[in-house]
Length: 267
Image (tube, rainbow, N blue to C red; front, side, top):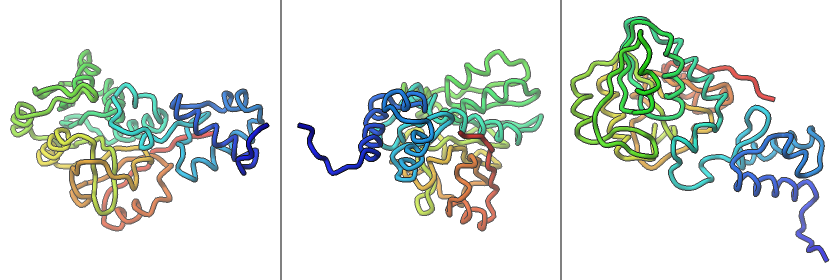
C-alpha cells in the first residue's frame, strides 16, 4: 500500500525533480516530460515555482541545481557548464568595455575564462592573470600580450597564489580589472571561497584603475567564506538581466556605481 505523504501530485513531482537535480546537477524540459509523464507547460511551471523557492536555477531549456546547495567548493570543471548562456552574456558585455591599449586584469573563474575567450580577437591589449587556464586560452593570440603571475596553483580553480604571485602583481599597473566572485552582498561586499584567492584579488584591485565584479545573478545576496572587498571599492558590476529586479543593484546604482546588465533569452 502506497504511503500517504500528504503531498499533492504536483508537489510530489516537484520534490522528485529536486531529488533528480541533486543527483544529476541539471535537467532539461524534455527530460522532465519523459521522466514524470507531464506536459512541457507543466514542466516549465514546476521549474518556475521551484526557482521562486530558491531550489534551483532556470537556464535555457531546463534547470540547474543552485551551486550553493551542493556544499563545499566546486572545481572549475564542475562549474564550467553551469549557467553558461548567462555567463557568456556577461563575458561579452565585459569585453565591450575593453579598448585598444588597455591592460586588463583577470582573476580566475568560469566567467573570467569566458571573458578571455571574448578577447581573443582583440589587438594591442595586455592581459594580466593569475589563472593558468586563462593564460593558455590566450596563448596563441597575436594581438594579446599575456602576463601570467607565478605562484602555487590551486587545483580546483587553476589560480596561482602565494608570495610569488603577489610579488609580480605589486609591480604591475592595470587599467581595467574583471574579478570573478562567489558572492556579493550589501554588508559583506564581494566574497570568495578561497582565502588565498581573496588576497590575490585584493592586490590586483589595488593595482587597477577600475575594478568590475563579474557574476551571474545567482551570486546576488550570497556571501562566501572570505571577504575580498566592500562594495564601495568597486568601479562597477557586470551581471545578467536575471538580476534586474534585485534591490541590491538599485542600492549600488544610487551609490554611483557603474552597472551593466547583459541581455539573454530564456525559455
